[in-house]
Image (cartoon, rainbow, N blue to C red):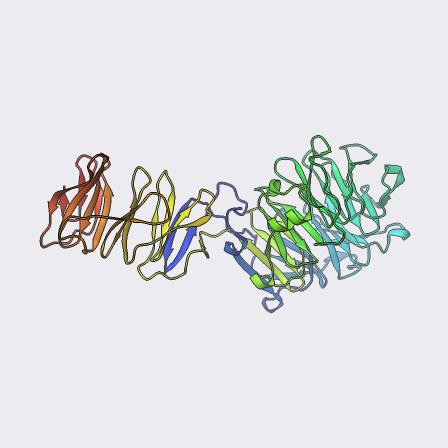
Length: 502
């Protein structure tokens, strides 16, 4: 069965269900929304109790949609519900069950690298193990990629390797590669190859045979290219910094090194929205930087302050996490030593900054001047990026709410009418005699800007403000023995209520 993770479309809206505030999430692209916190994403986990393998060290998605997992217990394939252990149907046997690097090629080939050293290719179920130079036979394989010309490259803990179509060779001085290791390798959109050699960053132009070094220093570094052509680099000592793939230049000055490692990036990717994701060996779990441009080159302290983490305490299957993958539907996957986790968008996300219970329910008010959320005690403002701030204390016993064309918030309660335009508190509106302590029903604004108020069991009033004389009222509809249950502006007339048109 082909694995097709669910995709959803997004719109900006809020729903309030079962006494909890839920925000409907969405975006025209498929990546996970950067405005939603990691805790608000839909999280699923598959552990060894669910049949998942342990020690998931490598992940990739094949052209058929399946997830391929390189683990400490061999090769697995996942269709979204079941894990299948893969054994070769012919050819060689796996030289080791401890797979630390995996690349699913567009051709359907599966390239595998092992912790004790060695590289294999699984093609149509037949495994082929490739011999390497004796000096490289025990190099731990960390990452395998393929460039735009079809050449496959492997980063190992002792150096860089290249597949020439029939055999693997060590990339050394003949290629102007002098690094003593290759902690990371990746291919940019323009076809250039980028390598972290343990001391800095080097690159190979498309079709070239000589590596060039950038004037940067980097320890154990990982990197990935963003949608805009920026190569984001994570390094244990400098934090996050950026390189322009087009100009082959550092986009800012590197800050000085931190005397001790504050974090140890083990894996990194950039999603379709440009957010940076990584796994951290020092602090554990996975992390995301939604807006990397805000902290580029600012040093480790600023980087750590911008990091949003997702760890065992948040539901991750384990704090020991290595590989990350964004699949074709924008779902993010993380492999851990205890299984597999996924983070995906969902229609509704709980807003933790709004209490989960409200005695008199919730209201959502939307207008061009701003969006608001009301519960029994507080008025909250919802910013365009869906950040929520507390605005004012609510009058007691909420019944209805609305925003008018000027952005004023109107609130009806069981004991009167209130409005808010600025400042720390609501202002109570004086109602006509006899209506002061009655329950305010539906509210609406007509074409002239008059605010209409239904007073339950009494009447329907129009209210408007006059700069010279203050508030005025006019009795419009008398409903002595009926209860108007709704109020809305009609197309040709003034306002329509549940008992007629006024």
